[in-house]
Length: 87
Image (cartoon, rainbow, N blue to C red; front, side):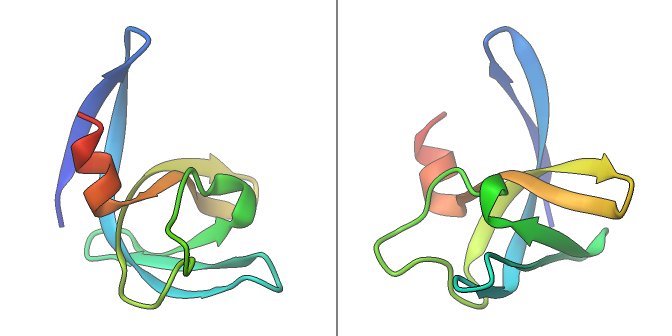
């Protein structure tokens, strides 16, 4: 797993690399998994962009982690390839 920083509008953001554990489009949520942080909740509002076929198990992704009252949540999630092209 890698973590890296990107600048956006002058602010530095910490991105974490992981994989989709599972995601259910009908329910609108799922989980991503990382070596360091384990399983992290993903709500559809946290997805920044994804391909025509949506998110599939084991898809590589990058995202930010937000601490919520219910635990860690993945936000600003992007497929790994899309995130690396945007740099």
